[in-house]
Length: 188
Image 1 (tube, rainbow, N blue to C red):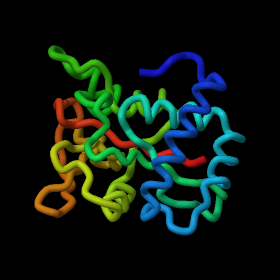
Image 2 (image 1 turned 180 degrees about the vertical axis):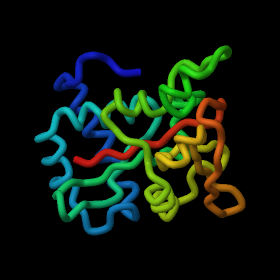
Image 3 (image 1 turned 90 degrees about the vertical axis):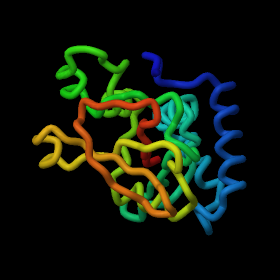
Image 4 (image 1 turned 180 degrees about the horizontal axis):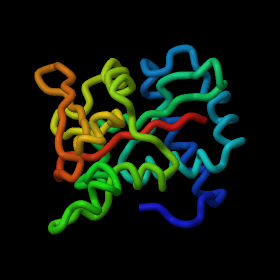
């Protein structure tokens, strides 16, 4: 899903910035009061983060600005695709879970793919915040960052939205489904 080269060509940068600007302008309810010029300046000053956003985009995440961290001065991007990103599904939770599977192993795991992309899985709090911007994962589900106490016992958690309500569930970390992926968060 990711390459060893963690920078974009000028053409790739231009194309990605155009996509991000369009999405930013079409979805102003996610970032009221923010100015695209300021976001773009941050992106251009952080090519590694721009590369990560490109990975989010290329795997179907449709990243967009959803907040600003006043402490760090960073813009916060979430995957805002209507359903769990299409090219990040059928993954178990983490490397330990992948290694534990004896047969029918998935192609990879959510934690390692997120790390390779330079992003983190959304926490439950972040996932619930995302849902305030619209109805996401009404047909799919997304692994979220699992608390260590749950993970130590072999479990992992995921969320979705059904019946106009956000649900948090548990599963064995080694499980994987065609309709379950993960959503990422990136600060720039």
